[in-house]
Image (cartoon, rainbow, N blue to C red):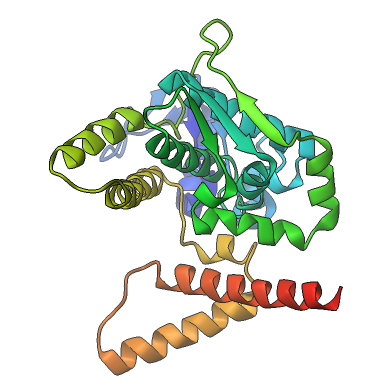
Amino acid sequence: MLFLDEIHRLPPEGQEMIFYFMDHGTYSRLGETGKHHSAEVRIIGATTEDPNSSLLDTFVRRIPINIQLPSFGSRPAFEKVDLVKVMVSHEAHRIQRTISLTEDVVKALIGSVSYGNIGQLKSNVQLVCARGFLNHMHEEQIDIWIEDVPEGIRSGLILLADNRETSTELSQNLESKLVIQPNEDSLSIQTDSYELPYNLYDIIGDKAELLKADGIDQETINHFISTDVNVHLKSFYKDHGFSFYADNKLSEFVDRKIIELTNRIYSMVTKRLGSDFQSNFVYAMSLHISSFLKKLQLGEKTRGQ
């Protein structure tokens, strides 16, 4: 079986090579000109784009079966809650502690998933659980409140506020607290492309002990390790094809006019200073402006009630 992930990234020449192989069952190795090899292969492709707009018609016509999986945002409320439960269960299993999340925390996690689907949700769950573990390292149960959640994830509540129907559906599928206990018998962690290759909680525990031994106060330790964990997770997901900065993904949850404004600001500033910023400037600034405007709108709605 040959699995081609993000198949829309194949250039037209690459797609033609694939459908030639599909038609004739032969291929040539790189560098070979007159020699052909035969193979029987089942080809499976995956894409996050519309196949009809990103793939050649001649290629699409040769694909006999198309299965469309719904994006995270279009899934029903009970599925979103179940996905959070499964992911938190994985974290509870890893650290062998009971993890408790308030309704607002679960809603923030769900509302913050705006451009990365399941991968982003998993990253956010890991970050929230890691911070909860850091704050309650020596306690039997990890209680996570909305105040413990990073600002970037907490803004998911603001995004949900604009969709009262979705927020109501989530409330109907949630208790005031979601309590997840580690269960060795029924839970087995499956390895996937979003699975960290190391135990994040061992790293947190080891670093916390080292910093504490150096006489650093707990607040500074928490701030330092939280920042470090965030960098670890973002670096891992970016290296594994989970793009945080693609304009086409950003436009799914940030108004296109805001992105255009940010691009103009970026061009003006880089021209005036004569140097480039990091590649995530447009992404971060667009999010900041969008979040600021939503907070203003939310404030106006609150004053009007």
